[in-house]
Image: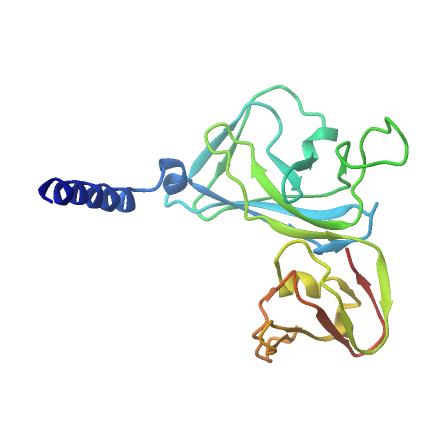
Length: 243
């Protein structure tokens, strides 16, 4: 009994120390924040993705970031399990090192478009090489390529699929997504945006939760469950990109 009490005390002490241990220095001391902004969260296959990468100095002092080449950032497209493509794959960068200086609160902005492709995906043509990304639900992240601070942005959902015409009124669709998605991202699948009245989803317990794109209206549907049907209500016919 005494030995058990001693072991229990030791294990409890270790657990407390582990929980109280500070986060890694890189996570605590990162001087900048990286943010990825997409023009939309849904695109048809073969359509370039419009993006903006913002690097903001969140420290109290000016920051100087060093780079081993002329590359400042990268974009990475992932499925649920593997990396499919990188923006830098089709880019050429000078091999000279460089620097980026940011004052306190200053933001550096990089914008462009990107048509990702992958040789990992099935193709009807043998040995076709990299092919445009087909329909599906993916994640895209921006990475700052600084030598001392390779910091990534929060992943953004990306839906690729054909455009379907839905009539005005409410249409219930079967489960479409392989990932849990923010309701705002799914709302961006509707074109024109003003056609969307609301999104609705029924839980396993039979309760409905809804999302309205108008800020004046409260919404309790924040995340689209990938297992449940989704109801889209439109004020007029619209193109809806579905995976």
